[in-house]
Image (cartoon, rainbow, N blue to C red; front, side, top):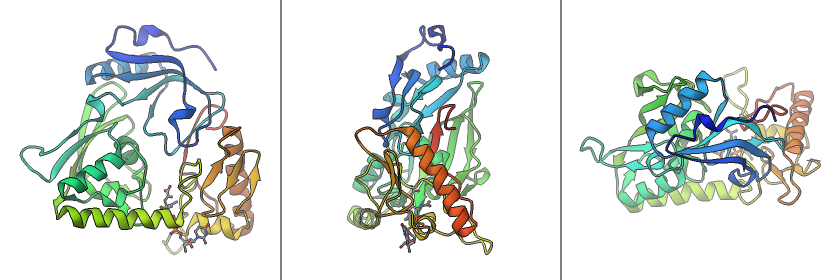
Length: 313
Ligand code: EPU
């Protein structure tokens, strides 16, 4: 690790800060090293000041969501890792401007909890996110989704804190939500207003159950992994091929590098041993899969999982 992040960046702010904070237990992989400093701002003003100072001093800022799509290097990461888990930054506000169908979810809110609460309230439109673990900010940043749709389908507007600490709001019309990609500018996703529709709570819950059981039957949800490692590649005819199928056809199910292995259930899931797991093994197996799939199919896979740390980024 390089120079330690000075505490003068955050000591006078309304934040919780942990120096040398272990990150492994905060990710689904459960492996990897420490954050130089992990900071949870308790209010928006402190977040803005911190972001401004980091920008001024060129200190890297990374946002940790639910850690579901993230691999942290065994050597850890420098700079500031932000956690938006304070009550203000993970809140959900219903009945926006008197409209029962408009809900504002802050970036740190849990998508899983929100999906359940919306069903309870009889609000439909986010069921496609059933079984996709994420924070709202993390899901928006990559337009997370699956067979039944993506988070972008429900978005009315998004607010982003730019690196200079200012807030900008983007309306749906200016936003593009594509396959695992959006044009939301770099910065910290503060909140999204979701546009939902009223429906019988039982119908919404039944849909949630159906989507969730599809996932459970086709994917290894109990292994330590980050879901799909690679994006489904775009073919010349404009369709996407399942990266899982390509890896499977390259005979890589069960393939192992040290503590990391290709799931025998769905080949796009790269899991790691819960005891003795190493991020370097996951990064190495990902590289080998890319080469083997290229040799077999002539298709270059692109990673979906985000890697943090100088040695694996
Ligand atoms: N298949 C295989 N072998 C495998 C995996 C899949 O032959 O090891 C075949 C399946 O039998 C099926 C086809 O490939 O015929 C497609 O499989 P699946 O329905 O599982 O979909 P996918 O394209 O592999 C995508 C998303 C998943 C999402 C599922 C279902 C990506 C990279 N993956 O997978 O998302 O859950 O559709 O909606 O877009 C994720 O993003 O983390 C993720 C898991």
